[in-house]
Image (cartoon, rainbow, N blue to C red):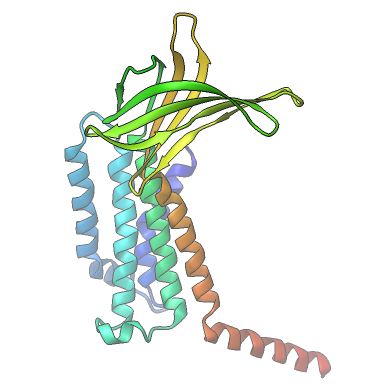
Length: 261
């Protein structure tokens, strides 16, 4: 929890700081240029806050920070191109690297906000051929099989995942036991999608019938990894800027010359 305030503070000041010229920047002027971007991010957060009912404020706050950073990075690269489309492709790679990296941080904040605010977790005794609803999805345990693996014995479930009555996936969660190591493991079945992931974990059989089944719905989980990849891509773009390579070479040559003297 102590990390959260620092990330919020970083998210607030990052778009303004990235637009400041080195040693010549004026914070008031930079903030004024981004007033419309700030208003758009606030409007998005308010919209989400109004649409959700009885949920944490972490979702709207996280979406505001993510939108503020992404929109701010977009405005920054647009201003560096002097608001001309034909100049965008001629910008240095370092400028593009900074914009992509900052946008990646914003996308990561979207993903974290989704997980913190709207994750759904459910644990129940699931009966075979008895559908149940979790977070707007319908799940149905169709059966449980004993499967022999290369070096393990597996209890494998077969779960049908439906949305609005249409089947969208067949999930096979497993509970494995390795006889040699005497080590049980749980293998979650995951349905990956752009806006959410659905995890299903099977547990032990119950005396009265049925099986323990855990279900997790994680909104925007993949966005965290996408944001990290964008940040890494931004770093590589910046490192590939020829100006930095030339400067590094010149610095080495000057060092060797001074050492020779």
